[in-house]
Image 1 (cartoon, helix red, strand yellow):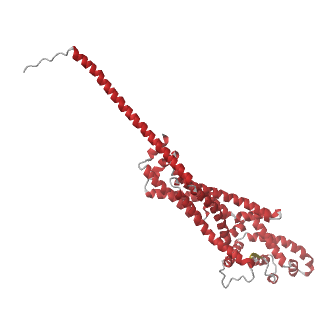
Image 2 (cartoon, one colour):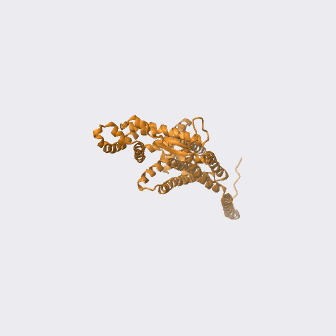
Length: 443
């Protein structure tokens, strides 16, 4: 089979080919430019659509916020009621809780200003109830009777010193606590109309009986038993309540008993409702709740300081008694201080957790860094939570963690915070390792 010779291209074919190549190139270029224009057009349309969606969403959020003012109103109302609830709880606790009353009385006894005032009172009661000069005359020879008055004067100084020593003893402390407990239990029984056969309001008063302490003091000074037995029954007896307005006082107690739990439920309910109604911004509203608790705590601390100062100015007539009054009021209102710092502590915890669960760049970075720890084994996370709670208990900021209910509440808040953080980090950074977290921080 012989090969057929290829025909040589003539000039017309070459020219046609030369014209076809530029045309094809031009068509390809046009097609490429057309596809690029189409891509650019699609991109512009996508960006425009995205921008419109963002603007629409922002507008919707703004409209939603402008239409829903209730969450802020509820948080504000709850904050005001929280302050009122704290004050009523303080009054109820200090006035009607016997254990708190005894604790308060023990704290008062430890104060130097109170000890000094109590020393003077007991000494005055002893010398007002007995004729010490006559008692001295009975114990010394007749020819030395002229020394009775000087000795009696000296005994008064010795009595003051002896009372000071007695007040600091454990024996006096136990007697003081027992007397206060008996008096307060009687008071509470009367105010709550729970009087039994051993409690009567016929005499119209509840008293703190320190007469036994006065008699013991006289015995320590060498005063005869016959003289001490003749000490009047009202010596060393302090009236702490008179029942001439008993019915009104019992009505106040009923109101306090009701308000102490009712206001607490209302406050918690208002805060919860505010967060529930803040759809789309519940994390922000939770943070607002925390801020409101901080504000309430600070206001309580300021209220305590200002009210104590005004009370001292209103009640104290002698400047020499101001220091004593300030000591008593400081100790008596210490529960308000604890509750104020408790509110601040609760608020700080809530703000920190709400901020950490937010969408700000630092919050996301913090969750990324914490993910290797919060995503670890459940046992390790529980152990870390317990350690964190123990650190808070050791720190005890402002003495806020001095009550069992506060310790339980803070522990629950910390546990909930760790649980919420763990859920979010496991959803956002399920495979995050310590190395990745450190690298992310460095970058």
